[in-house]
Amino acid sequence: MGSFKWMVIFALIGIGSQSSASSEITVSIFTVTSKSMTVRWSRYSGASSYKITVTPKNSLDASAFTQFGANSVMGSINSLTPNNMYIIKAEAMDNSLNVLSQAEVEETTASEVPTINMATSKQSESMTVEFTQVSGATSYILRAETTDLSFFCETVVSSSPGTVLNLQAYTDYTLSVMSVNNGGRSQPSLPVVAKTVVAAPELNSTSPSNDTIVVGWEPVDHAVLYTISIIMEGSDSRVKLNTTDTSVTFPGLEAGTTYCIKGNAWDPEKRQGDDFTICQITRPRIPGLIELEVRIVGSEYGLSVSWAPSQGAGEYLTFSSEGLNCTSTIGACTLAPVGCGQRHTVTVTAINEGGHSIPSAPEEIITFPCPPEPLRVEETKAGNCSVSWDAIPYTDTYMAFIKRDDGQEERCNTSSTSCNYHCQCGYTYLMTVFAFSLAGSSLPGPVLNYTTLPCCPEDVLISLASTDTLEIMWSAVRGAEVYETRAVEGSEVILCNDTAPVCALSDLTCNSPYSVVVIPCNEIRGCNHTCRAHTKETAPCMPEILSVAQINTTGVNVSFSAPN
Image 1 (cartoon, rainbow, N blue to C red):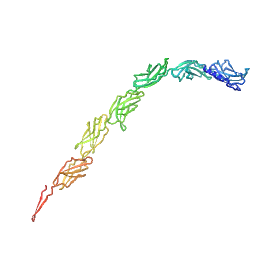
Image 2: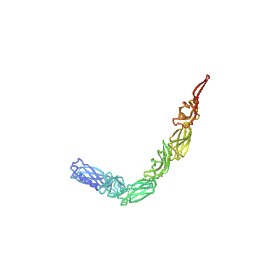
Image 3: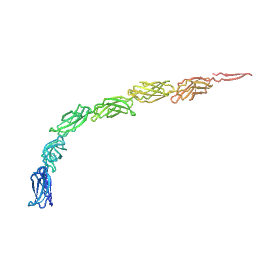
């Protein structure tokens, strides 16, 4: 009806709009409906009226005509047959009804007006309309408008049912349908008022634990009830519940498993609204069966951690009490670098989109012990040495390696912090100590270089070279670089330093016992002052002549002092 009124108004405006007459009359179709056509023609000079005749082209139905005044240029012909081809003829006539000029045009009336059978809303943003399909229609137009005319839309569909989109939730719409063919569109059908359903609750979900999912949503306008259902992925078993609250909790679920949750709202008319579906994975199980092992990783040591994978875990995070961490998508990763003598408490947490699992039960491991240091050597007496070190935490036993510079090696296995070994004079000893525990051996520690005192000469030979000189000879001894020969008599000390195993001590006091000792020395350790002394008396002193007297011609009397 609205469309028809618009055409009439247009026709009235068109009357008299063509002031100049054409040489020949022309005719055209302004618009058609199922049972009418609006015809437009040009003004013809001298015409006192215009006759419009419509004749069915493909049927034997009678023609119909309508006559219009001289000032008319548009008019409608009604009571036509829907979806029928017509020949429309316009004739310009004088006062005697003589035809001055004529023109023809062919046009088809629109299809019949469809009838809406049912309009339903299954989704809050759309309405599905079922209608009768009419002969000759090539398509249909669904019209939807609100009662306050704030919304209007037309949707072209090919057949019934058709759907109108982009509507508002829980809103009344006036719906009508028109058929369309080559001629145009039919009149709108009788209107039907229908209301869209309520919108879906926009669900959000979390997994606070590995067996629970909590679902929440904002209140939906006009909703009086909500239906929430949950189903495990890959299963056909569904749990459904109704609630007036805006959150539900699903306990007793499988860990690390994806569940899909669907929600609907119901309106006061007990119609189910849109559905909204989300999927949520529960948090993974706690990783179990953690195994720890210290390994060499490249040029450093690392702590290899392995565990039994958790269902549904996408990633694992491993923490150590020493501040190390590593991530992995499989059941193992390595914490690096680790040092000696460390106590690591390790936990593993499984992670997926649902969140973190509870950390695993802590596992403890102590890394290999640190190398003992500092090393100290004490030579308690000649030939007996002791190497010692500070106690190392987390150590069960120690192994000391003592190697002499001639290649001879000695080992000492002990649970204490010292080892005794036989150390001979004149040798250099290289010492290192390893610590051992259940985690393995320590790395090599510092090497202590210890050189014993040079050996004492044993075959010292002392002889009188003259009345005031002693000559001392001996065999070269191991470890000596220089020899200090010392002769002592009372407060008198005579020294001789030489690299050769021989020495002559002069300017000695005659007829005196001297204590002679040969002291071997080297640059590293200095001198060995423990060597045995040898006693040697110098030659008797020379007698002193006191007087000489001639006794006779053949004899002299000499008087002298006797030496000590």
